[in-house]
Amino acid sequence: MSKVQNQAASGSDCVQAEPLDGLASLDGPNRVVSSGVDLDGPNQAATPAAQTANHPAVDHPKTAAGAYGSRFLRSCLRLPTDRTPVWFLRQAGRYMPEYMAVRKHHSLLEICRTPEIAAEVTITAAERLGVDAAIIFADLLLPFTPMGLDFEFVADEGPRVHAPIRSAAQARALRTDRTDELRYVARAIEKVASHFNARPQTDAGSSQPDQLGIIGFCGAPFTLASYMIEGGSSRNYIETKKLMYASQPTMGMGATGSSKHPDSAAWPILMEKLVTVLVEYAAQQVEAGADVIQVFDSWVGALSPTDYRQYVQRPTTELIGRIRALGVPVIYFGVDTASLLPAMSETGADVLGLDWRTPLDQAWRALGHGVAVQGNLDPITLFAPPDVLEARVGEILAAAAGRPGHIFNLGHGIVPGTPVEAVLQVVRQIKSSAG
Ligand code: CP3
Image (cartoon, rainbow, N blue to C red; front, side, top):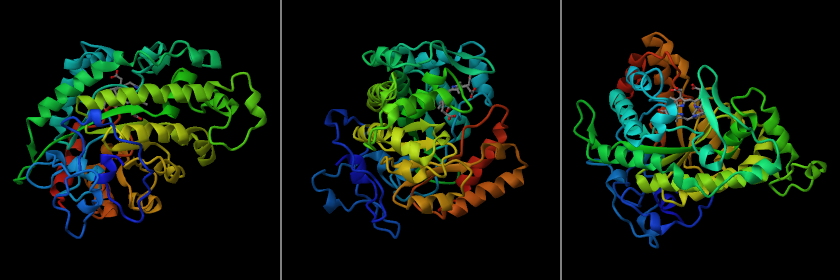
């Protein structure tokens, strides 16, 4: 059993998958460990210490309640907190003048690949907003380069992959032995961790210092494969689904006629190679000080529940299980996922990121309260008048009802043009609504 599971709640409605074995070699200073502290209240959510006898409790400041902990990390583990933690998807993006000032002098990839600049952008956004967690500045597609897939970001278009994968031969040619080249992201995380670990934050009017959570991230197999295959953003994912349907079933559903397709091996090869690279990439980030890994499956909502279960769930579950075995909680996020949430939850993720289309309480009830949730304000609400925005934020807090395991966030990323003042208003509101 991993340390993550020791720490997480063990309620009868728990839907966590059995995690894989922990990797003791990665037990660095920031690993999640069983604290066993301060859990006796009505909201008790942790496994009693007696049940974790094989994994002795080791106090870690970030999971402690009160004097010096991380409410973000505690919420990921469904432990009680003094107030709801808050951060924003794409909090360091183009809506922020400080980011645009850096962007004037550097390309997106230059920023990502220069640890000093990536760390600075990460820290500036988190401090400007006063949020409870910092997500490392990087991009989903960075692992493509060591895999041998060239891409660029084209202004007003987004990512463009130069030679999209359309055959089993191309999938076979992808490299999995150069993931070390991504270590610039880990080096940026080290800088962010040493900055924030030395600077606990205290809310105005409060006496409780708290440490920011440090979020590393990677793409999920489906979403990354969709960029590899389509060559960029897509509306209908035709090429992706063609390769997916051409594959042998990945869940033992029995052979279909399509399994004789000449490129039937492409999808399983892609899934396997992506999982190999992403686990190593996530391990680099955890070793460097990431407290949590968020797995972005932004476009998984393009799939029906049947297709998700048949072609995507197994590699995604493997990825999430192997990241959790590193000793950190995993946040699994996608958009347009209302019908997929139960299947996504079966991956064993500690936290599910919700989009804004389903009311938070409905989604959480459907999942069972054995998993934490993150979300789920419509990012475009940040363009609404202050009183409308305040009402919408209040509805989400009311839907969460103070239950341990809610992290306030948007249902998708902040879009360019969003007023920074609206984001700050949300942070102020969350901070003033303790409980
Ligand atoms: O604070 C942060 O969250 C920023 C760090 C970050 C970036 N990309 C930098 C970036 C993160 C977490 C990502 C993840 C990412 N990248 C996702 C998943 C998140 C989501 O919104 O669902 C996806 C799908 C990508 C791929 C990608 N990168 C696209 C489709 C685009 C172009 C579209 C767009 O939003 O402009 C990018 C470019 C990109 N990555 C930008 C940033 C800040 C904007 C372009 C720029 O600064 O030049």
